[in-house]
Each structure stands twice: as C-alpha cells, then as structure tokens.
Image (tube, helix red, strand yellow):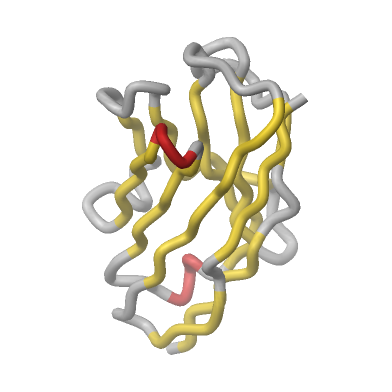
Length: 119
C-alpha cells in the first residue's frame, strides 16, 4: 500500500494561485502514475490531472488545462499541483491518488486538502 499525504490547500481570492503537494511513502514503484482529483460540495469526484512516474507525460481535464500544472519530484516522492488563475468553481476538496496500473483506476488515496476560492 502507498500512503499519500496532501498539503497546501487554503482560501484564496479568484485569480490567485495555490500549490498543492502530495508526499508518497510505502510501497512505491517506478511504474506508478499519480493523479489529482477533486470533489466539490454536492458533486462527484472528478479527474483533474495525471502524471507518469518519469514526469514526461501529463494529462489534464479540459476545465483546468492552461491554468493548472502537475509535476513530480522523484527524489522526494512528491507530486505537485500548481493552480493559477483560480476560479470559484475550482472550490473543492483535492485528493492525490496513485495508479498501480498506469492511468488505471486509482488504488490508494490521500485524505484530501480543502481549496476554497472566493469571488
């Protein structure tokens, strides 16, 4: 099992920026891909971004493309989500996840970090 701990959430005004971090520990592997998902109040969990272990491949939801950037520091076993030009509709709990089958269904999840964007 992989343990994931997110941090970096908070309250920000529309147009502002935040950087989320996700530290992984436990049985990590060089084949795992990492994801960010989010869940807004009253809505289902939705995909935000994914990154390969090497960091060479990234994928984004259309709703965040051009505003969010996913990256990883392999030496620190940490994945980041840089969020710029934030909008009130980005308000959600953000979750980090690991896919043991690359880009498959997430196997392990973090506890989530709240991001609130005020208008």
